[in-house]
Length: 134
Image 1 (cartoon, helix red, strand yellow):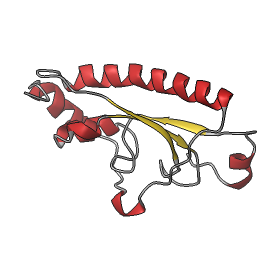
Image 2 (spheres, rainbow, N blue to C red):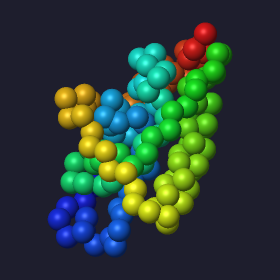
Image 3 (cartoon, helix red, strand yellow):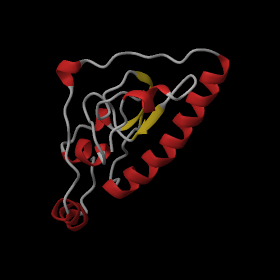
């Protein structure tokens, strides 16, 4: 679903998205899945972004990275990243209450769009069961 025009302008101060990936490197859903499957552990985390008409393309309010531990499964990373998303959202709300939120434009040259994992992608991750980092 895309938000357009007047819908984006209806919010008073901010219209934010909690994104489970580090943008602009990982856009769309299940971003941590693709970062892990590519062994791109430095780009596992959460972005709080200002909504615009694109897909996860708005300016960044804040980002928090997740450290992936040795022997950790992709499923435990997904769980911990969800907890990090809650913490980041609360941090953004606190920051917005005390002043303006940053709105750092994303580097458009580094944007990648990742598709939703298929059942086969998820099954391979489940069957693999190997640690995501050693």
